[in-house]
Image 1 (cartoon, rainbow, N blue to C red):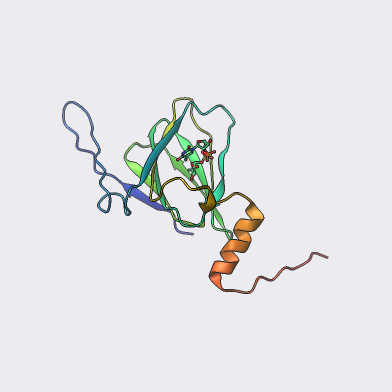
Image 2: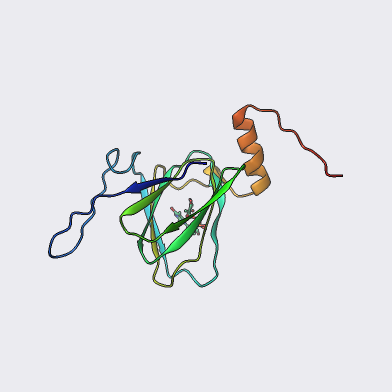
Length: 144
Ligand code: T46
């Protein structure tokens, strides 16, 4: 699985840094929604779901957190720790967000409005959905 990180261009001067993000330029889709999470409690794991069509870019604009990505075949863990880097998450990727520092603010740019029918919250269903999309036959091998 390829991990796609966007490095945004800071416009720095003697006063500090500023980052500007535009849809289709810095963000590779139309931005229909922006949300952010903060004050995440110690030990919490958020996410535990995939999306059928939603694409997103995650930016940890303050503090740090980790994102686990799972495409049903392999998993990758990405550390977000810079306010100028964005993690792209395509559709059909199971995600978990964890190890939030107490000061972490995770900002998310989303390609769609919030829609419960786009969520896959059951991991087995996620695996079946990906097999269905791949067009491959699902082979279940019993142990023993
Ligand atoms: C995702 C990861 C990265 C809303 O009312 N509107 C919204 O746009 C969102 C995203 C959430 N909510 C409400 C629904 C719940 O009552 O906020 C509450 C927490 O949402 P959720 O449990 O879905 O949060 P996470 O952190 O598990 O997942 C979120 C996104 O839902 C999801 O799309 O990819 O962040």
